[in-house]
Image (tube, rainbow, N blue to C red; front, side):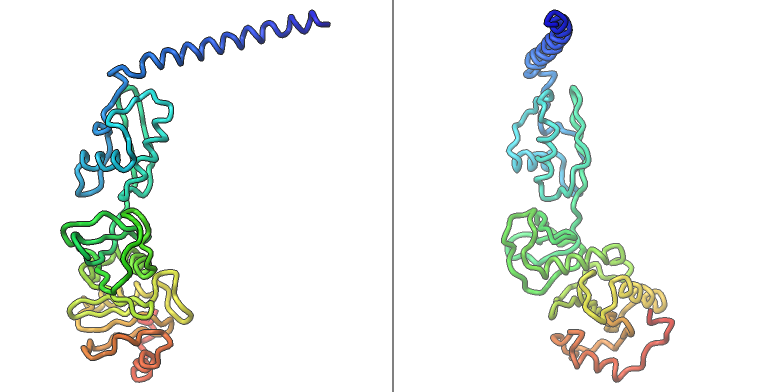
Length: 292
């Protein structure tokens, strides 16, 4: 019995020994090649498409500095792919890392970048930008053509790349992101945004749009964001612009397009506001075809 067991184990042990020998030889060969010039690459030579307006060398230097990576990469490091993934994801412009590709002499990184949708006036220095989630982005030295939040908000508590802690910034950013692809058509690229009692107002010389709450945060009786947008786009198309009017698109049942009055109260915008509802009490409802 024992003889049969020994005879059965011998081939298994021999095979196991061969496998260990191959693995050991592979690791030894890998270690011997590890520091060879052919298997090293400068971090600055990583191939990638940098964020718009940023030079690749500058971007890579920022990634390396933020993630505390060495100036040279050892391409045979087993953890290199995961390490580069984490390093690039740490940069405030990077929203996600799609793919890290490594071969014997080449590293390529594909990323999805954050897009600025809202500007907050500077306290000191450049213009402060945020993305659709309210994430604070690197500052810009030139004011971009984006809506500007003029409501005084709390200063950001965290570093660049973190969520702006004031919820009003996130609400304004979410609204601006929803409207972003239509800003040019509505001529609102350089508009100002004010938040009054939690409701958004977009305005620029000659136009005022009372939008209401951020998309997905509408109150009872308030039209959803898609309905508000369709009302503005329809009015713009039918009248070739939004000029010289205040457009209130908040209610489900009605929309209002009023003469733009400089003395209209700017601090009574709540859906439950008596002054706001009186606008509709004194006005005729729009035709059914335009009250979508």
